[in-house]
Structure formats: C-alpha cells, structure tokens
Image 1: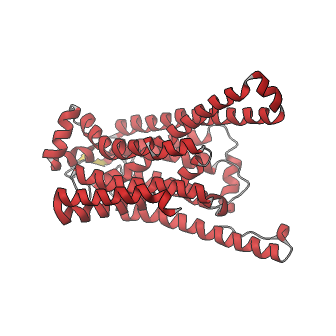
Image 2: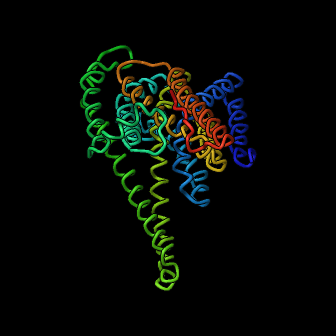
Image 3: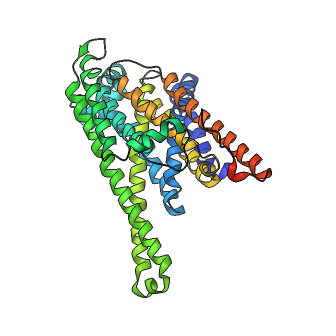
Length: 380
C-alpha cells in the first residue's frame, strides 16, 4: 500500500536529488533536500484538507489529481509561478523573466520580494475564506466545542464570512500594507495593491468554491432521485445525465483543489528564497515536496484516516486560518518559515491526539455497555 501510493514520490525524489548533484554538486543536493522537507512541513495541512475533498471523487478523478494535477502543482506553481511574478511585477516578457531568473538571481529575488504583498494578500484571503466558511458552519462533530458552538450560531447570518474577510482585508491594507517593506528596507505604501489582490483572492474563492458546491449539490439530488426511482430513471436515460453531472462536479472540485494548492504553495515559494535564489534548485526541491503532499492526500483517503480521526479536518482548517493570518502579517513583517511550519504541525498533532482520546473513550464506553452515555473528550 505504501509503495503503491508513494512509489512515484520515491522515484521523483531519487531523480530530483541525482539531478541536483549533477547540476550543482553536493551543496545543491543538500539545498534540494532542505527545500523538500520545508515544502512537506508547510503543506501537511494542505494534504489533510485535500483528502476531505478528494474522498468525494471517484478513482478516475483521483488519478487525474495525481497525474495532471501534479504537473500543474510542480511545473505551474513551483516553476512557472515565480517567473510569472517577476514578469508581471517588472513588466518583462516571459522569456526575459526566465533569462533573469537564470542569469541574475539576486535581481530576480528582489523582484519576487517586492511582489510579496500582492501574493500574500491573494493567498491570505483565499485561505481565510476556507477557514471562515468552516468555522461558521454548524457541524455534528465539534472539536473545540466552547469556540465552535457560538461561531456556528453566528454563522447563521448571511454572508458573514465574506464580511469578516473584507474587514480583515481592509485592516491589513490600512496597517501592514501602508508600511510594507521593499527589498533593501525601504518603506512603501502597498495599500492599493493589497486591496486589489485581496479582492481577487476573495472572488476566486467564491467562483471556484461556488461552482464546485453547486454541482456537488446537484449530483447529490440526482443520486437521490435515482435511488427512489431506479427503473424509471433507466427508461428515461437519467443515468447518462447523472454521469455527466458527476463529471462536472468532479471537474470543479478538481479546479478547487488546484486553486487551494496554489494558495498553500505561496508561503513555500516565498520561503524558498530564504534558502536559495536558484530557480532550478527551487523547482526540484519544492516539486519533490509537492509530490509527497499529493501522495499523502491519496493515502489519507484510501486508509479512511479522516473517518477514524474525526478532529483531523478541524485541526487542518485551524492551521489554514493561522496560515492566512501569517500571510497577511508578512505583508509588513518577516516571519520565519520554521514558525509557519510548526504552527500547522502543532494544530494537526493536537487534533490527532484529541481524536485518539475520543476513540479510546468511545471504545471504553462500548466495552462497558454504556456507549450512548459516553462523555467524548474535546480538544481542550
């Protein structure tokens, strides 16, 4: 099971490390290895959230996620994306941006650093919306019940998450963005840039998430109709319609996953510049890490880990909220990538331990014949 799920990741790791040695010797080997660990540690919460979405897809779309999806993740976000940032911010052509990345690495890093406020605002708002929509939803299973119960009641107010996100964006633009630091320590007002990028992130979330949710709801309605009148559905050709609808739902969920992965990768791409300016080593290291994140996502789905450890999804979403805040704070202040990674690891580890305690309590209560009266421990 491990080899089947992580086989491609192991193969890419070996090829990537060998390529690094040929490209820049053992120093390059060490840099690629460090970048790989950095990407995995920063994106573990990404894998947990992805698994919650991927388990709704069939085997075909899971394969698409691991093939076409990994091409987008590795080549799109870890190689093309940094070049696009430079091309847009410096008003260069794509070929000129690639030449700059390969020939003048110091200048390339300066341009990416200057573009960071826009990147952080876009990614921060997208991730913040994911977190807000999660905590404002009333769920049967609650991890931090003392916090989640009142937030679920507040969530009954229409468009509350959008309003909160816009307030956070406005505050960020008026505080962090007004005193953002460019490369070299100069202070510059990036309020307008942050507002535009943040609104773009919010719109992206609403379009992609909205379409995904719409087709998913339609799919559930269609499956329910088929279950109630299967014979009538077959005569009228509805099974064919349901298959098409499933394709639409899966497509938009796949699109949602790709945008989600892109937002998660912002901190990894920016953080990588603290380790190296070399775009080749960056692509190798972050690409290897992205492979493991995807393999881990599929492993969590196939093992049913999220069903066994019910608080894991909660912990991952709290980690998303923390990452969103960190991204917005980094518009002005620099935060060490180790801190960013540890926040996610601690929250997910805490939620995992809470799930283990819950499972033990339920098992003990079932053995005692008092399962219905069992007091399930919370995450506190």
